[in-house]
Image (cartoon, rainbow, N blue to C red):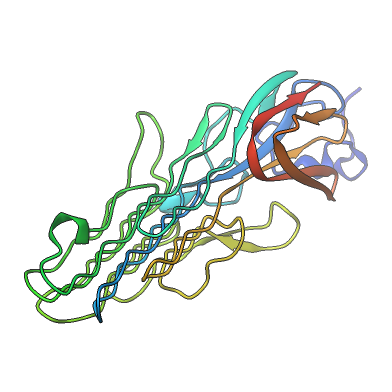
Length: 277
């Protein structure tokens, strides 16, 4: 029977999804995802010379109206999911001067943030440069030599950009390091890149902020602040029809809530599988 009133239709609350023709009561189900990798750790300091901020974890989403990292729009990833089992991995935040780890949902991989560069009382060499990642780490500061560079972004084949570059550090005795790149903007000398906000969980939350902003957070994918602060772990968030039956393996830590007509699952730790039926 034709839909005569959208206000009375079962598809009314699924307007965020790509296809209004999908029947929300049976598979394949419309769904949305947000996949954020672990943030990179802040760079070590030596004496008064500060390490760079860690880069934010890569940020990918297909929720219509939201923004992916690096200024991209919601991805043109198929917005339906069929019965089956799908791999989920939550990327850990990088420790002091270490890259963050990747977060994965099925074929969607977000790249861990790049570490911040080393702060050196002498010549820091290449380790003073920020590392590349989902967003790049900021360069460190050092006593001699030129300005350490910020890290760039890593783009896998066929994958959109997930974040921004880190800011440059300073040499020649200046102690100001570079801020880590964020999902929403590049880091600069002394300032972290901004994150990206999403309301997939029912309220607006900003994630994937570059290091040096003073905000690390839990399961945000934020980069670690300069001077050895670890990055935040990432997160995988799935938005599905309540008619889908979802089972998580024992290796995953997750919670669920109802947002509008959908069920939203937030996975915060572990590696395992989610089974849809």
